[in-house]
Image (cartoon, rainbow, N blue to C red; front, side):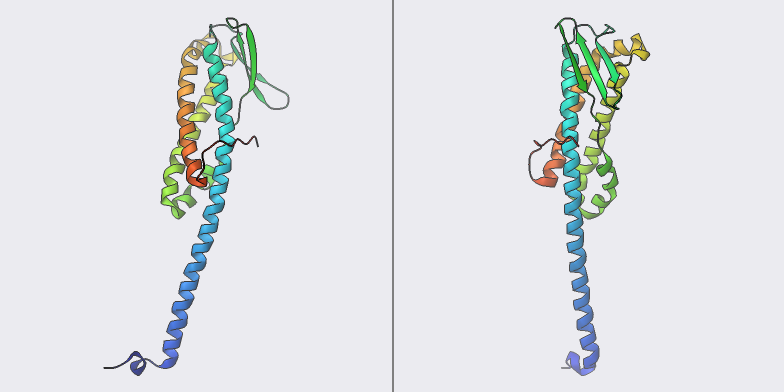
Length: 200
């Protein structure tokens, strides 16, 4: 029986072995590079979850306060204040409770989710299964925020205030659904529960 060396010159055999080793090393290098990239993306996504966790808590606080307001038709019930600093505040005046609250309307963050969506789809199919719903959840949070600004705008008149009657219940449900979805992504990225908050 002929051996490999009997029909393949020694130099060709050495070249073949070197080629195979080189390809294996290159595959290992690519794997390590992709692993590092995925770890970095997970850290960025987790950070964005923490930023949105603060936004969720703030929006929920506003929605809970709105639910307590007795008369949504009152012009003084909910107004939006645009500060010179650029911050936006939801101001709620409850005649029934006899108190007044002023809460900053948070910014919703989706830059990292949008930026790394395709990379995650390529690198980790399981993680992509959490990122895509989180992007939808963030869009829902953004809609709640925009609706709050609409309902609190004095320029929109009585129609917006009539719609504001059911806004708080809608907002609370959407915010909670978004919280659960974003918490699931955070868990997939960190193996921890979402308890951290990040203001910036």
